[in-house]
Length: 113
Length: 116
Image (cartoon, rainbow over all chains, first blue to last red; front, side, top):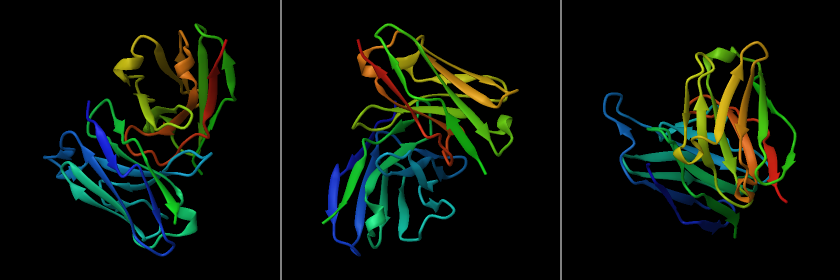
């Protein structure tokens, strides 16, 4: 199984400041034939199901604010919130869909400092 | 619009079985598979498995093999997941999500509590 490890487990950021979450996979999720990274990011607000933010490592889902961006390739990925807003308080998960069983990172809790 | 509506909360005793349903609308049912994900209280997301709504093919996480069965009913556009031999550590919110990989739409979740 591919193990997804996120860092940090939690972070507190001031409103308007940048938040950066890292995700490392135990093996590459870059598919050679398509040159696509099978990596997504989800946001989960307490009491709600997860919401898809980013897929193919860097493609923003329709309707997601452009302050959210994804980067990285192979085994190392980053989700960046360029200017944290109050409504961004949530837990964020990376997810690999490169192979079965699909796996999620353990989650990173983002709070306001 | 796309909707996935799950069945209501369940309370079960250890050793019992539970079936959770996921009724879909707003899209062609057989175009997208259904994935099941669970989340224990205060914990992260756990992928349980996937079923093709086109031909019924399944892929289960190894830890659930033999204890979980996913099915679909195309006539009612509904997916089902049965978990047998429930244990206390099966207490969790169970979610269905549309698609095999990019989960753009989710059900609201079904809380299954296993308690004696």
